[in-house]
Length: 134
Ligand SMILES: CC(C)(COP(=O)(O)OP(=O)(O)OC[C@H]1O[C@@H](n2cnc3c(N)ncnc32)[C@H](O)[C@@H]1OP(=O)(O)O)[C@@H](O)C(=O)NCCC(=O)NCCS
Image 1 (cartoon, helix red, strand yellow):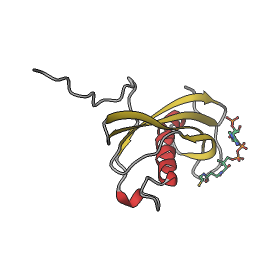
Image 2: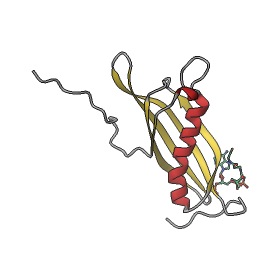
Image 3: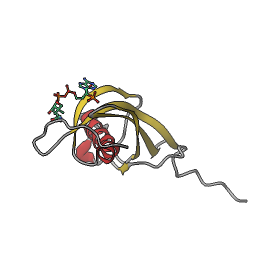
């Protein structure tokens, strides 16, 4: 009798910009993953498409929204997706989604976090600069 193995890929057809596994050092006092660690991963992930669009350095100017929808556990495989949703004169706004793939009571893939961040293209003196043409 053959059994169908669980799907190991996110039910998400897009390409994850970042995949990372939190370690025990990333946990809070309760043993779950510290929200600040997740926020830093989201900031890193969001900066990747922003820096590509800016063709150079960017600085995070705002975290417009951030929702922790489900807890993250040490050992989860996180897949982070980041999509540009708005482009201004100097700024790029990115929507970020985090999915966790884990095996606890059963195998599951859950959306754990969603956020929107804005990055500003900066020059060597850390001043804002216009985005290059698309
Ligand atoms: C990034 C920085 C150089 C921008 O300079 P600034 O004079 O403040 O820039 P502005 O007020 O002109 O805003 C720049 C862009 O950001 C946008 N912006 C400003 N505040 C925003 C906010 N709260 N939410 C979303 N977008 C915002 C503006 O609309 C503008 O976009 P546009 O040019 O596409 O229209 C400056 O704010 C800075 O150095 N900030 C610190 C960055 C940093 O260190 N980040 C890491 C945090 S630890």
